Image (cartoon, rainbow, N blue to C red; front, side, top):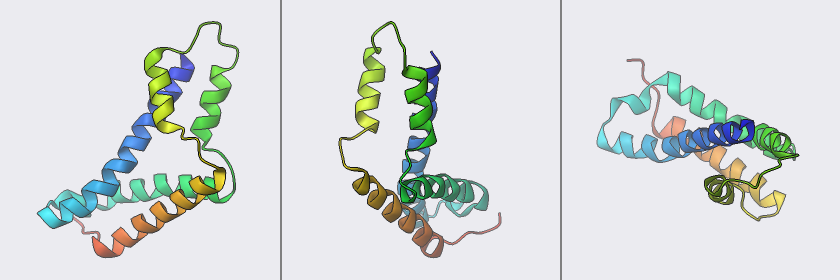
Length: 121
């Protein structure tokens, strides 16, 4: 049960990060004022920054570690939906590929600060 909760939290954070990567530039183009709001933009930068920092240090995401620890010693097989979600999140790539991806994405998010500046509302 706790492993499933860790997976859900992980999935929500991934969805939040992906949402921001797409909605910030699209929202700027469409004139949506919320994409300039400092609060959620700083949260988005922090979330991706933590991910990029962990990757740069050669460490797995702490949510991945927690889920792994909580999944150890399970008596029952992994539920099917959990298997599918895990397959979507955990790609069979070498660690250096994830490091590169996370650092490039973090660079993109920092560039968005310049391309879509923050405004007080």
